[in-house]
Amino acid sequence: MRVFIRLFFRLIRLILTPFMLIAEWLTTPKALSRSEAQQAEVNAACQQLALYQFKACPFCIKVRKEIARLGLDIEKRDAQHNDTFRNELQQQGGKVKVPCLRITTGSGDTRQVQWLYESTDILQYLHQRFGV
Image (cartoon, rainbow, N blue to C red; front, side):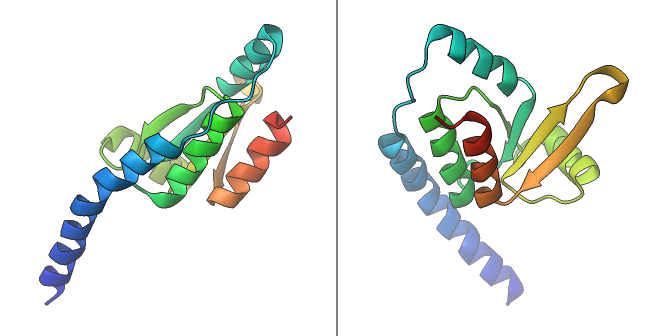
């Protein structure tokens, strides 16, 4: 019985995924406009961030849309299909749960990494750091 339930939900995901991705593409807002200097500063700050995500996760889509709206160039890491990123998330972050924003602060020996889970917490962090 368990096998049939898993197959059923896998089939549902296969059917819904393309529609979710098309809806994301159609409804993604335009980026905020900043001066070139401000955007360069924001891009430099974004080099310290990485978003671990699943492509069709609704909460990940929510975060990606807000990243696009804020005009952020954050690296996106597919933890669903890439075992390296999945293992990083498990071993360094503590759990395989998405979305997760990896925030690196400092450099060299003073480098610290924070793993921020929950889409609302990620959005709050991005608004505090990069909001206008």
